[in-house]
Image 1 (tube, helix red, strand yellow):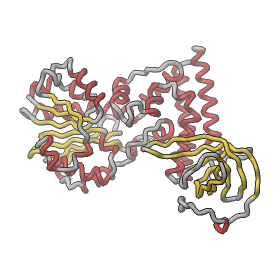
Image 2: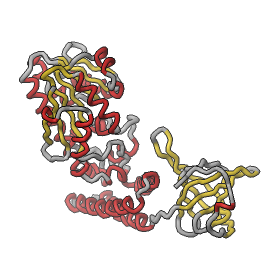
Image 3: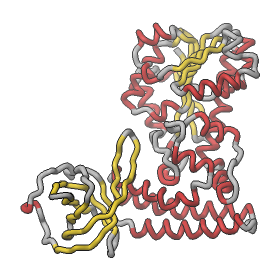
Image 4: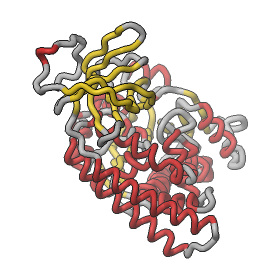
Length: 426
């Protein structure tokens, strides 16, 4: 459907319009700087038909914006088709979409009533921990089923994202009491998957009280969270084996975050004489890593074996630049970053990284297998939608397109099976 029309034409109308003067509340969704935001204001409904409405507002809207209109009848949603300035106000034409949110809204209301009841029990210290956690699990599963059905019916990604924002708004009064959920809805570091969020998952310790505590526990026990913790253990095992088989290797750690595995492998790194360069774009993550390494004897301040460097990994698609900045490496690894990169760019990046590997060296990476977890929780309950939903077939296609020889690829998974590792030997 064409959503960007600026001409207001009566000939375009397919249905008869009925005049009205009903006051309405408008909620407008905009998408700027990779963030979807909502603005609310009051307006007046001027006319309505089966396929469109015209409203009067003191705020202009651009064609393509999604508008939710609440009047005396059922909430309606549509796309702005035109906006015309008249005197001190604006007349705005909206083409209505056939978006049926009633079932989702009812499920959300029921979900919130359940959570409010649990919240009161927690506030009065009347909860039974096992029963409370089970009640939360059941409530989440029920509303997730409705969210999944809504996505399958609507299919339009813009509408789905907008309804997800509405869902988070409606549930925020309770769910924001969870440290983890609040953090993954607001992302205070400015990007998704930051080192502090991963550290919370690694430590596996709830930080909230009341009902927030139970949502912390619930979140930490989800398959993907378990997979992330296991991913760290698996990575340490793989790197340790490589260190014990090599002398003085050069290692490049891309999007290093808190460098937790580097700290845990300190003894092996010293023994092997390895030099490891850890790069990340987040200066706070590098500072956190430096503090952690201070207690291992591998502090960048006192040891030449570890280098922490602020660097943007997305620049690493250029081989000549990579050689200038880092040179050839015996081991290159990155876990987590590649899930966030679009396929075409990822293919180019993997090819470039493989070209940096010395003969006999290894490129180590991992992916989240979308067939092993339920992504609806991360897109609806959290605003964690930056990582792409890929399967094992997708991963193999990416590696093949990057020109990585199939005979040199070893596939393995962490204990839960949610995250798959690929170890590519040069």
